[in-house]
Image (cartoon, rainbow, N blue to C red; front, side, top):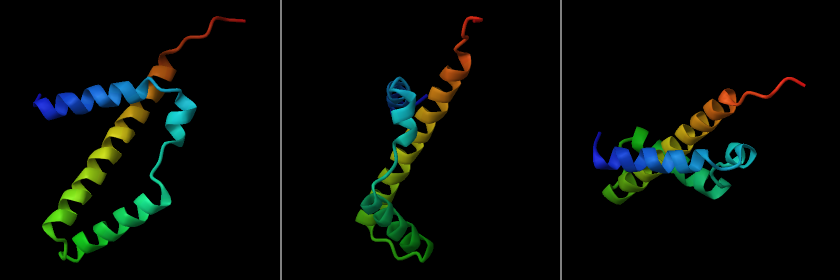
Length: 85
């Protein structure tokens, strides 16, 4: 595993330890989503400038980290066994 992948794994693990309900609510602000949509559209049109490509890549990394954290948090919830009662 590369160093950056290891860092991503650690960050996802830390996020996954957050309160599940707050983690599930974690999403991009409307402004961030609009910026991402604009960059994605420009990428599809092949009109991205280098600085925009870097910004789009950062958005994608953040989205993947949050998605991985949510998956890990759900998996941890599935492992919780409640006593009969």
